[in-house]
Image 1 (tube, rainbow, N blue to C red):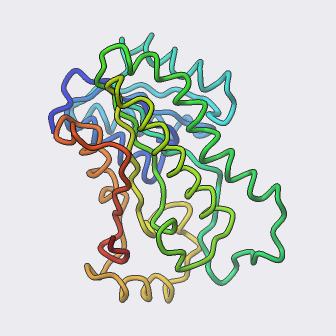
Image 2 (tube, rainbow, N blue to C red; image 1 turned 30 degrees about the vertical axis):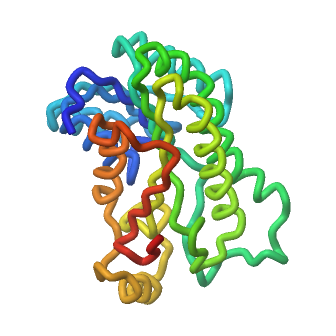
Length: 255
């Protein structure tokens, strides 16, 4: 999966899954724009890790739920790194995955859903609008959106989060149908519970163990497990794949 000469923009890349994705692209020779919202020091740590892995990298701050900032982020990526070949929409609204303290449907308000829609679909919408002119330019661009296996099996009904990720899958498939003739592919990677991450920090060990017991590979995903499939879907190795959702959860959900 040689990514030499390619430029990749990863949103929400200062920690967790996003940081692992950035490092994985760099290890394949890509130059990576490491987007972050607040933690500049963590983003710089990722930049150093990317360079140690063999690629170039730059840290760029932006709130990708804001249209103007998303557009400026793409412009700065092209200015700093010369082009844009791959967009990975990983950023999402903060969410704590704790089945014992989750908010039930009766206690949710519509703004709770809107917050998750803005973080998942809204951010992807703004980023894709800004990135597509650059991805079309060479008729070989790729977009990878990070969804969740909860869209297939809501083993825990995280209503607002799961609904937003389901909408992201619909967004991705509609976009794939439109931009495919222009040489741009759009796919999703849908992980299960990933640990350790900030989101899974509050998930009790007993629940993590129950998920592992229900998973054929008998463990939880690590951030690096998600990164490899993302690189694959952005690489020439998946040149004839678009509009798909790749489940990365150790076989817990099989389709």
